[in-house]
Amino acid sequence: MSIRLQLLERRALSGSSESNEKALYELCSLGTKDARIFAHIFPTLLRFLSKKRLPQVTKCSHAIPLLTSEIITVIHVLCTISTGMTLRDSGAGRNSIILGPSVREYWPTIYRWCHFLHNSFVESDLAIYGTCGEAALSALSCVSEVFALLLRIKIISLQEIKAIPGAGALMVRVHLCALADYLVSGFSGHIFDAFKFSNDWDTHWKTIYSQTAALIDPRLISLATKNLCRITLQRPLDYHSLANCFKFLAGVVSSSSSLNEHFLRSRSVYFTTHLIRQISKIISCPSFEREYATNGYYFLETWKWSMKYLYFALEHGGSESIVLALNSGLLQALWKVTKCNFPQQLHFSVMPQSFTDLIELISTASIYRSVQKPLERLFDKSPLIDIQKSGVSIWVEFRTLVKKRIKLRYRYEANGIMSCSNPECKSPPSCKVFRCSRCMIAFYCSRLCQKAHWIDKHRKDCDDHVNNWEDGHPRPAEERDMTLIQHIVLSELWSIRPALLQRQTDYRRSSSLPLPPILINFVDFTQLHQELGMKVLTPEEARRDYPGRLDTQLDSCIDELQEGVGIGPIVIVKLLHPGQARYISMTLKNPNFG
Image 1 (tube, one colour):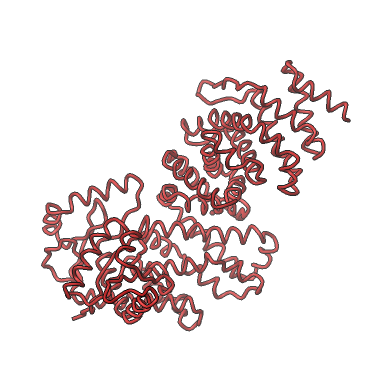
Image 2: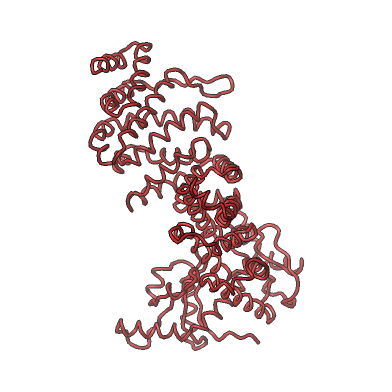
């Protein structure tokens, strides 16, 4: 057999294209069946790729690149390399020792061919048609396999990837394209797994994802979302593809706000919520154990990663995305699972941390009027009307907080809070309002108020909102929401004022600060249990940690406190807001309900 292999290897590297092509196919066939044979022929396959010159891509009359026999041979060799290395993948350490030196030596060659295949076929098809043809799919599948394997078994180091300009960016583009096409979406999960080696890797890939996302063709995101819709609606559900798909989504949107926004605009929240509803029905029905026995691991992975992705999407999308999820049945689905009696060993799998995170995120968003409205409707009818009787702590806390804030909203709306965005408006608070049809953020009680505010201020703000939206930034909160939020925050902070003052006293004692230096409390309203996010800051620390527009607010609050107008203390509040968290500062005063 050894003599036969040596003969085939010589022919594979000979000058005659016909003989070396036939020998290569025979070597590839033998290598994919036996790990020892593959280890023997592996250097020969790499040398073949190194000696081979990049061919010219032939295109047909419709500008579609064609796979010539020469390119097909290269793809076959690359696929054999990824398959053969998988045969030996009993441990990353063993692969690195046996095959690592050859892979590292020929890494520039592997990258050169992967770059050629991706640019010549995949990127070309996407640029012209917004989708991948048959040739592009073959190239994408091959390149995805190679990159996924090299990253997963850790043969190629981060330094070696950085050494070739554009290598990391190519891997990210392949990753995105693999998601976009359902036929190869399974490879995305492997690539994403490989990006979690260390903090150094995380930082590197997050930077590349952000840079690549800024240049991504929106049609690619559209194609990916169509496939996301297709696999969430197909029956029976393909849990293997779904698990990889949502694992990928959760990874990239946590690394790139730009990609998160692209997917949000394609209504990924709706499709994901629909999937969560379907899975919750399966978990809550008697056939759950049968489904788990058939698709156990990927079933629970789909459940976990779909909730994880939805959490990142709602956190970035803010109140607008949360309202969409609520109206699509998210809360009923989560409640249905909570009431199920499943085996104890499955408890943490069926109700992972992302399950709790979603409930807490919605509860903290209840500070928005637009979120309170659907929650108020849902809590007053079956099945969520039974939450109080259930005794499930997180749900009872959730409902109690929402009901308290709804009551505060009614009190403030009845005692003078204005819904009209014109500060000079003289209409009563109870009057009906309409949105600005351009920005959808400002509200007016009449055309007269709208015209007056447009001339004085709103013209520029409206243009800025519209331009930011068109540039891909999330829509900010409604103006009437922000007005109500400041009143609710003031009321809730006033109720814990003694605790805030005690924290300042404790801080002075521990820091040996003289009296009476001004201190500032920080309260995190993005957490259900706010005490976990409380801390005390000096004005210098506050300006250092929260620069920007907050500086002006802080100066105003400090002046107000020193003049004796406010009662205090000064508090910086972190709020859930579309795009990124919003920070406001205020001097506490006794809320006056009239």
